[in-house]
Image 1 (spheres, rainbow, N blue to C red):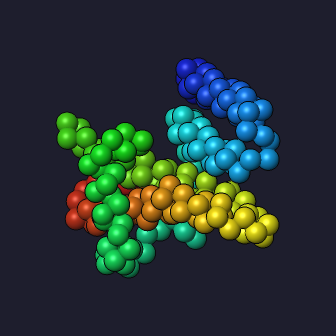
Image 2: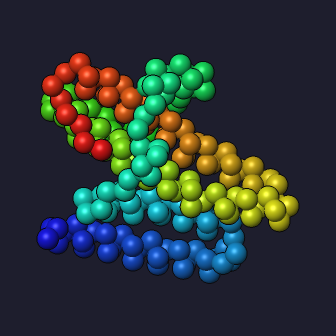
Length: 183
């Protein structure tokens, strides 16, 4: 059985998110697109808190990092390396410090698993959020839809690409060392 403190943390987080959602909906209106954005962030936050209990995974067909991804050439052209530097060299690093290697205890297997979990969280958030962006386009709210596409790129797509590139580099290390990674 999982430690009770993890279950309590998930429950308190879910109740806190639900309460703040209801209160904000009363202030800005229940049909506000900003509530949908908030739900995406709540989903990712709750997934992070629940990680000790439930680790999200990618669909099997998308799990493996392809050779072209591991090479990083396409990702460099897309600016993923610069995005990674932005995350690493600013306070944004603290949004998910678990995907950085600790110098005092280099745990490559743990890093690989945390990166895979973070990638899956961003993937599912993107997948769940995309239909609302399409809805905004179909209802001719082009400005809001473009803003949501930009947020989707910045908060889900680029993190996914960055985490896949990281996993590809770790796969390369796996081939050269005795470390075993489990995804």
